[in-house]
Amino acid sequence: MQRGRWLFVVLSLVAMNAWAQAPEQGAEQEEAALPSLPELHPKTGEVVLGNGMAKMVVPANFGYLSPEEAEKVLVEVWGNPPGSTTLGMLVPSDVAVDSPAGWGVVISYDDDGHVEDEDAAGIDYGDLLKDMQEGTREENKERASAGYGTVDLVGWAAQPHYDASSRKLYWAQELAFGDSKEHTLNYNVRVLGKEGVLVLNAVSSMVALPQVEKDMQQVLGFTHFMPGHRYEDFDPSTGRVAAYGIGGLVAGKVAAKAGLFKGLLAVLVAGKKAIFAGLAVLVVALGKLFKRGGNSDGTP
Image 1 (cartoon, rainbow, N blue to C red):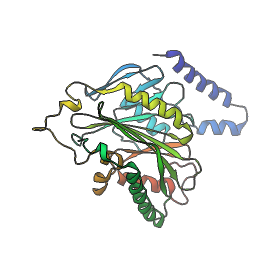
Image 2: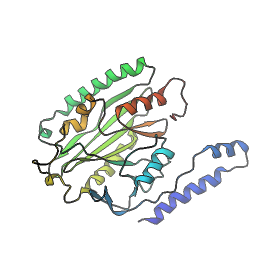
Image 3: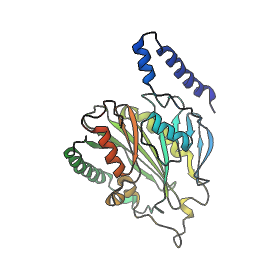
Image 4: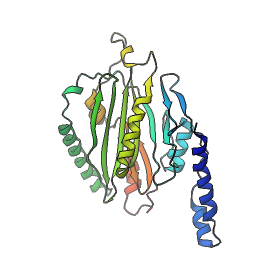
């Protein structure tokens, strides 16, 4: 592991904290109000996920955080509600997680069954986008009538692409929250397995799209299912088949009918990165974040 790089980030934070402790009382109070950065131990090299289900070979420009450390970042640093179920997360090694430029890749697993990919070649992603935008507009009417801020799907930041040979799918969405001038990037990667899907979601500002896209393509390359859990290991006579295909992975339509949004919707609000799983949780969380008269810093 590139210990020097991580040490530089830690020492930089220590130096910044020491410099901030100016003799002026106002500066001291402001410093005291800042949350402390949790102790993290990012790993590089081979990382096994989900009790041998999948693995990553993490390069030096990333660090892998365990599920426990990922929870610390999500809750203590990014202000999410506790209780997220993840397989850990990836963070860039050259940016501190509490930096405005900090971002990460949250890793989870959907065990809804074997996702058949026969529909992939016939999907019109332009039409799919229009359907998703229309659905978002309808949801915004309900949010607005309830006094909540709107969430608009501006468009594809990267059009969905499915590689049938590797069974990997990626796409990115540009999101706009309320009247915020800074749009949010939600970059999604799905790796199809025997009876489920690895879910890797990154969130950042749209201005970081070139770097995030480059890094996420690298993530695609070093993330794989282990033998026995691969897509080709599926036995149709005994295995479970998911109720949706590739289009459903992107749009979440099948799950939405049941009141759930499959996958993680990553949002960036007032400098805080908040990740919510499930539409019901999202409605409650957005209510706290956007409620008129709520905290000005976007804290739930």
